[in-house]
Length: 132
Length: 86
Image (cartoon, rainbow over all chains, first blue to last red; front, top):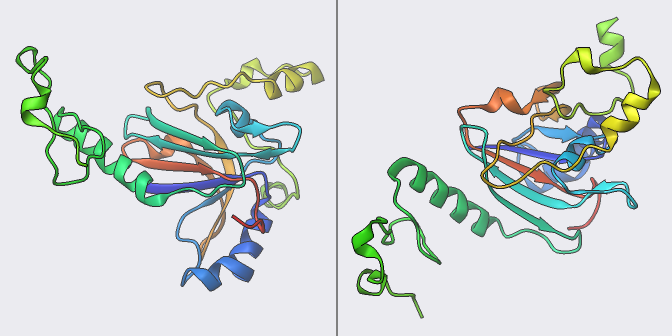
């Protein structure tokens, strides 16, 4: 899994932010590339560039090895992300890609998956129950 | 020359990266059109390719192209700005 962060700040600002603040939160500094989207062209392409504010809002995209977007989440700036949910989704998409099984709601690694087939129609209740 | 260009203060990111060079009209109009790119990102569709300047801790400054990551899972995170709060 490769992480790329991206904002409209220049790469020089990324460098100073990493040095002055982030390296004090994460030992060794940020372990992934911090991309610069000055002008917001990349954000526009992904539908997350706010022209009036001149910034990219909080958009998160899971892209598979074929370059296909499997998931996206977009938040307004004031609320931070939940990385546990992001990691859960990544693990689920990786499992699906490897097995062609599907993962029901609330799925976590190790929990039961479903194998879609005509014989399963109307019988999901027999093999899977939602957790309380 | 290259070094000078790579140190310039402001250089817009390149998106979509796949745009062929031949399409770039010499007139200013072309640039305006490019900025008005319609959002193309949708689940189940190819992630639009782009190229951006980047800072990598302990490595310094380099260019990152999304399509260089084919074959790997990528988590792409946009955020409003450095030195903000959340």
